[in-house]
Length: 547
Image 1 (cartoon, rainbow, N blue to C red):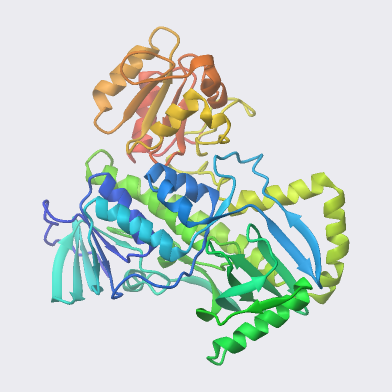
Image 2: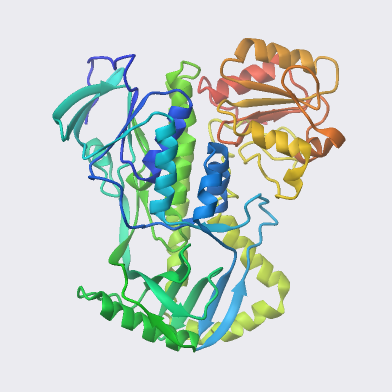
């Protein structure tokens, strides 16, 4: 739709943001905006929540996000922790790969297998606590952008409706109405067709691992559900389906018996789906007052379980920026950084998931014959094994993701190899064991703050005064904490372990975004440096690129 010259402004006392789509991405967006005091309206064309689960894997970075959102404690009991990837060929176990998070430390070195339906249930309860009611059966029919709002046309149980909001966020999936009406092209291609079935399986197979089974010219994947004995089965070669779930069960059972070399019974699946893998994305995720997130902006192979995770992180990236703009603490230009940061993520995922798809299928017969030799080498040489495991974890977990080239990242002036996180990287690079210390415990609690955080290490004369001045001027929207100091905003660090991990000298400072990524840092807080960093964070100037 085109942007009109003039039009009615969004009512100041009504919903400021309309979110189309109440799946996990729409729910996460609504939750973060509501937590930050932005009135939202959440609609979905479906008559109610989905009963089946498309996505299952929740990776480490998403677990960190859930922790910051305050929903992790409700997610964990409903999932199954996975820390293994087992490969089978012709009745033999080729290798068991474990996670190597040594280069990307986290408190959650795992993948949590949780049904999408369960994830959505937890998020629905969370948004309900924030006073957001999901409007089911309400469809977005059209919209028109104005200079200061978006007029939307809706249809639902109460009939047609025309209303104006400040912003429209499309979280309405791969067939997004918002994307279509904006005329944004979904660039890419369709690749392979796979078959999926969710079923109870009688098999002597550990459910703390994902299993890759080479069978003939194709492969079968067995992915454990949280429920004991239930598996998601995926066939990359034999994808025909004539509507008989029992036939699918028998085909999977035969392949699993051959690939695992043990008795297997697959019960009648509760859900069967044949789908063609789409590898597509849009070139921009913002168009005026309309923004897109999740599958509405990028769709890709499910080979490494990235869809829900990437959409969640889209939502978490967007919501704090939109909230700062809505509350008048940032310029609308801040929202341009959403597309600048997340479009490259979608582009990189198209490449990594395409590679993962080829590896999962492994249709090359010569490659299949070489597998025993390759994995004999992997088992024999620990460094090679570690390198493979680190590469898998780095790309799959999203822990290695950085926004170093973002317009919101002030380059690090310190020499290469300096201690502590560099601007653009996530701050919470800590293991669960080290996070038990008082300094890290306090910092992780600070990361659950809804505002950006300015951390200033106590030390030379002037550091406390500079922190106090920043608090007095910006405290409405900025949390100011003095690390190892005293008085208001003190953040404890007995023994200095936190300051050592963060590379904070006396008087040093860090400016942290609400999503936990580092915007800027310095060795001595000065009003001039802080003014630049705060302007960058609020979209009032681009980060200087010279260092």
